[in-house]
Length: 462
Image (cartoon, rainbow, N blue to C red):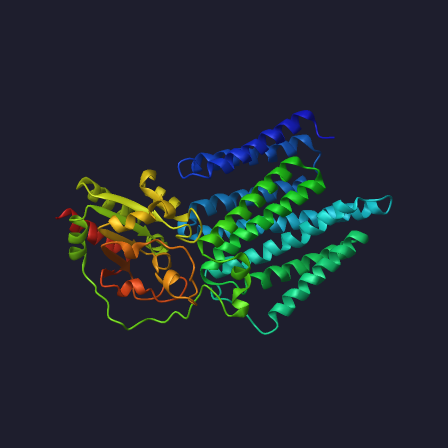
């Protein structure tokens, strides 16, 4: 029986998780939300130590120490541009841990079944935790490998993949039923192995800008496994935390798919029928209009309204601080500057907001797509820094394009467009951007950080 004080501590931890999720809904409160969530997690862990008689402390304590060291070192060394990969790894570890705990609980339930009846729903929840936790673990590792470029980011398909996936799915259901009828550890192990195979087969056909959507989906899977594990273990705080993660991950997945203008089924299985967000990636030899920093500085310096469209290239070049200083200089000249943030700018929702917040960009200047899309017609200059697909008119004008139907920022409606690009290579979706060849578009080639510094100096000299 859990002591009353421990139940109250778990309740406080659960409230902390709810407040943390609320805090993460806004850039202004995200830092405090993270801290509140961390306090809740520490409280829940400490409560377990004092409320339960724990065995194997000689294994538990070193594991906690190792995990803490890895977490601290990772937090200090991982770049903001690599945050989606880190999210994928953390998510995978959570799913794998839930699956392992469920396997251990299966061993306990199997022993109980020898002396009495075990509720079938408990066994069904255990089977669900094992298979979905394993799917989340292996699938997250594949998404990490794709984003980290340890393997190709293109969809990976082969003849018979749908049949193999369908067979593994049916086998998982079959062994889940077997495990409920006969809760033996061998059936749980087989179920876990099938889950690992399902995770790999699920993510391999996903490529390009769809990979972050799958990360969000797998995050929801992990939350659901933790919630199911909390039910089996009778742990309320796990049940609440898992439900929050599962629900928020599901909603985020839906929002990301909508931001890409595609259904979740098309995202997961589009490559199997020839569709994908990743195109051929050819480099066009059509002529474009380019200019140097001084010419672009004149465009910016004599504008009344400038809208900046930041993208992943900005993050890679670590140019956000120079960009914020440029915006400050323009603001001092009486020029109104805003940042147009697409829902999938960067690699994940909120990724670009965090990068710009790190550079001390005022929250008031960060405008979501729906809020600012109507303002592009009044913008004298749109400065696109490291973005591509989120301003590609092909999403509106080219049926059959990988990104067709995806809501985009209406940069093409501005009076002048300045594209800061390293080269003419396509964006993450791998398709040509017609906006580059628009008569209103000027290209400023070079590394974003170096070019931004030169542009800043040129604007200051006006």
